[in-house]
Length: 556
Image (cartoon, rainbow, N blue to C red; front, side):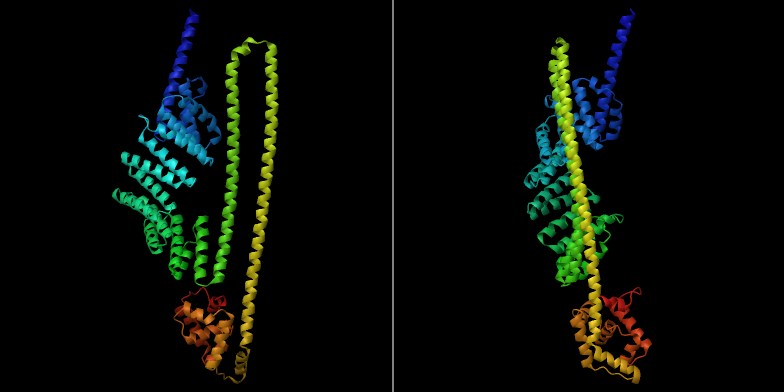
């Protein structure tokens, strides 16, 4: 009697445990559908022995655990889970869960930069999305992400096709946000296919929907898309107009995007020949944290300086562009190496998983044979296992040596890159020193050319009388233009308010004459000369009190 009671209690407990596990799985499934993956993760963590489930529950547990692991970026755990789920759902009629499993597998492959494998999973999922119980949401996301991967592989016609299907589904769902996203994807495909009018058409439709449904937060991205299209078409005035609109709809705290727009405005003004405005926004975009924006910023400003025939400034911008480009390439190379290591580890785990699964399947077929054989057969099996173990160990040791070699190669490449950077900095210092010496030599040569005129200043110190003729001033002006790259002409172009006498004062400053010497030449009091120089600096040139006229003209 006691034995029967004990047996009944065990059976009830087993059924109760199975029931609770089923409820937990259903609850976790609903939470993942509601995008509450953290809560689902807590429920799954409480399930201690999923191997005791039925095949269907085990497959559902594997799918849910894989989705949670992908959300938490634990990619090393996903392969085994997805294999269990895929094997079961591919053989079942459950179209809802096979779509979710294939979508999860595609996203994992995409995270590992295996776009071809990701596309295979998405394409396999597409026919299942037509199932009766599959929601429009899953039809939408599968088509959308298939388009994303197609764009990564530069298959823009395929991207347009998948995005068009996603657009039809979004309209059926009456979801304006999804509709705008699909319209943006279609416009993206047309833009990179060179069909700018089609890209404009779909962007305008997206703009109308945003205004209709008051999706104000989407406006900056739409105006930025307009700006990109018109830039590709070469219509820089219209592109500039939409950059202004995007700026008006940016939050004041969104400094990263605002400074990025300033960089775009600088490029547009440069293309339009409005060089002062280009320089103004070039300076305003300096705080932008995005390295790609900084790279484009210096490259575009180099073009602007080149168009202005300011070749020295263009060269400096190109140097800065080269530095940023090198740093971006170095970072990209490092991230690629990390991605390759992750992919290598994932593929190794997958191979190990497949090998062990094959061995498990083989052991299942042999289980009755193993029971029937003698101790000798068990001894042979143990020997085979030992051989496999040693072979795997040698294989792992070889792989570890290969990985160590790769790491040493990476370290040597990093050291080589550091040496190149140090050499580059030394070259920049040498260039700065040469430029400084060049300025000093030019100043000395300028004074030497005007030596005969400067002698008059010295003689005036003795007899107190000096007169410069217009011819003397013409000689000084010609010398200044010859030595300092059209010094007076550039002054007049940059500061149109300077008159002929102002230019003479600037030439005397360039000759490094003292205010007393200037007073002797101009027959004025020293205070009058000082006031005249201040008026030129403040009223004519427009500089503040933080810089003197001598400092301003020294490098002009």
